[in-house]
Amino acid sequence: MQFVNLLVVRLIQTILVVWIVVSIVFIVSRLIGNPAQSLLPFDATNEEIEAITERLGLNDPLIEQYGRFIVDAAQLDFGYSFHRTGAAIDQVGSKVLGTVKLTAAGLVVALALGLPLGLLAALRRGSPIDWLARVIAVIGQATPSFWLGLMLIFFLATRVDWFPTAGAEGFRALVLPAIALGLLSAAGFMRLTRSGMIDVMNTDFIRTARAKGLTERAVILRHGLRHALIPVMTILGIELGRLIAGSVIIEVVFSWPGIGRLMIESIFQSDYPTVQAGVAVIAAAIALGNLLVDISYRYIDPRIRTAEL
Image 1 (cartoon, rainbow, N blue to C red):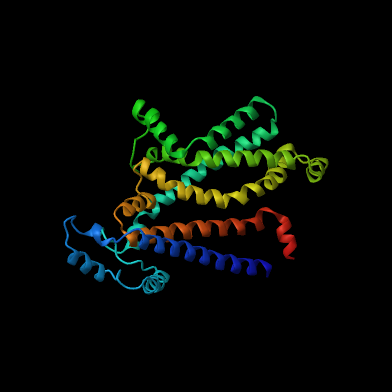
Image 2 (tube, rainbow, N blue to C red; image 1 turned 135 degrees about the vertical axis):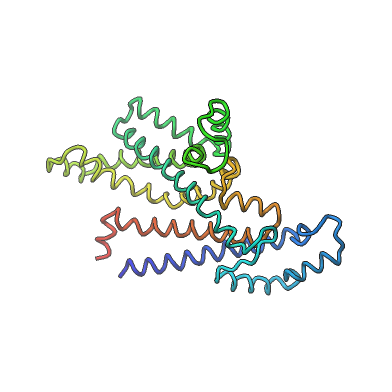
């Protein structure tokens, strides 16, 4: 029953977070200028600007515009794009798969590099492997993802032609963006896994598991690593949000067809409906990702299940 209550509370929090983020974007977008000017030629008359402003409903009081926006947004209706054909949510929806692929690939890179390196560094503490893993972690956390993306393009795409410089055609086009996006998170996962394993391997229940005659592999993977992953899961939701947000820049660097690149283009075009729809989708994805991480605690940490009984 406690789990059901927790789930309901988290769902309410998720809805509130999305509502707050979308509301902020709505207010900011209305304060930066009149989009009607970007829809008309530079020599448009004041009468033409007023006409299109009236047609878009931008002359109404801000609170009235906000009320219409919230009611429509609750029905996933963000209006029609100012510069593209069709509804704004459809424009964003057509780019969702690209962003999901890039974010998932970045997360796979982060986990595939961070967890094994952290585990090896903890088990070989003070060894060259430990030293190398810590150096990689420092480099990963100190390197901006957009700069790393540019360097990967320069050395691995233009100099040796191992990977394409841009686009999303085939698996090879996904490799460089995924590395550029996931390296920073990999460094964080590595450091947490290392410190968690060092702490866990000195606890009483690990000594008890060894005294029962379990193999060292079972002790490390079934008992040690499982508990060391709890702090990793704590930041997984945060890192997932960072990966989704970071994909905005990576999509621009690699000309990747995703929500982030679409939003950047829409911001420059003052395409409010598309920007608002994109922010709503990204905010919902980050909030739901954190919700799934909270739920996963139940299955990783047996103490949480015991507390519910």
